[in-house]
Amino acid sequence: MPTMTAAQRRAQAKIEYDAFLAGCPSRRLLDRISDKWVALILAALGGNGTPRSMRYSELSRRLAGVSQKMLTQTLRSLERDGLVTRTVTPTVPVTVTYELTDLGLSLHELMRSVKRWAEAHMDEVLANREAYDARVDRT
Amino acid sequence: MPTMTAAQRRAQAKIEYDAFLAGCPSRRLLDRISDKWVALILAALGGNGTPRSMRYSELSRRLAGVSQKMLTQTLRSLERDGLVTRTVTPTVPVTVTYELTDLGLSLHELMRSVKRWAEAHMDEVLANREAYDARVDRT
DNA sequence: CAGGATCCCGCTAGATACTG
DNA sequence: CAGTATCTAGCGGGATCCTG
Image (cartoon, rainbow over the protein chains, first blue to last red):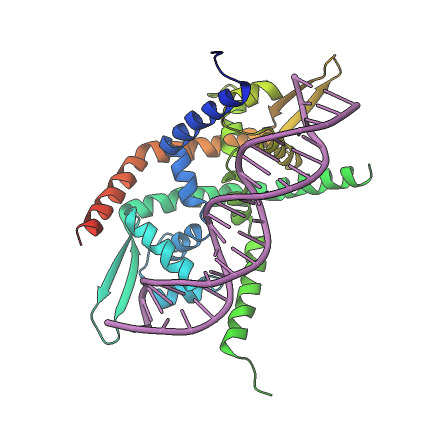
C-alpha cells in the first residue's frame, strides 16, 4: 500500500502537535492565566503588594460581573493548582476565606509585569489597530 | 415604581463590568497573548534572542498543528496590532515574509519571562494538581 | 453564606474545498 | 505559494433553580 495521503500526514502532525502542546509548561501556564477570571482574582487577593484574604462574597462583589458558577469554578481550579488556599471556619453560617499561597504570590508578581507591559505599550497597539482599520476602510 | 430588582441590579453591574474589562489594557493584553497561536508565532519569529523573518509556508511547517485559516487569521491580527510586518515580494509565485516589529520584539521579551516562570514553577503546580486529585479520589 | 446541579445558547476552531 | 470562503460541531460560560 502507499504510504500516506496528505490529509493523513496532516492529521498525524496535528496529533503529535497537540501532544506537544499538552505537555508544554508555557502553554499550560498561558491556559491558566488567560482564563477570564484568574487575573482578576489574583489581583484582588494580591492587592497592591500587600496580599490579603477575602471571603467568597467579598470576591463576588469585587468582581462584579462574575457568575457564582464561574467564581466557584475558578477558585476551585486555583486551589487545585496550589495557588490559593481555601479556609472554612465553622461559624453559623459558615465563613470561607481565600488567600494566595507563596506560589500564587509569585504568579501574582508575574501578572504585575504583564500589567506593566500593558500599561506601557497597549495604547501603541490600539493606535496601530485603528490606523490599520482606517487604511483598510478606504480601500 | 420600585427601584430595581436584584436581577436587574446584577445585570446592570455586569454591563458596567464588561465595559470596564473592554477598556482595561491588561485584559486586552491577556486576550491577545492567550490566543492559542500567538505565543507560538512570537516564539518562532523571535527565535532565541535573534529574531528572524519567516515565510508563510515556513511558519505553517514550524507550527505543525495549525490550520491555514488560524495561521492567516492570527498573522493578520498581529499585523493589525503592529506586532509583525507582512512583506510581499512580487516574484512568481509571490513570496510573503513575516517579521517582528520593535513592539513585537518587546512583547516577545515579556513572553520569555512568562516562559521562565512556567519552567521554574509549573512542575510544582502540576504536582499540587495531582495531590489534590488524589485527595479527592479517595474521598 | 457559599456553593451544587442543570439547561442552554453563542461563538469559534477546525475541516473541506476553491483561487490568483 | 499564500491565501479566501463556507459549514458545522463542540464547548465555554451565563442564567436559573436548589441546598447544607
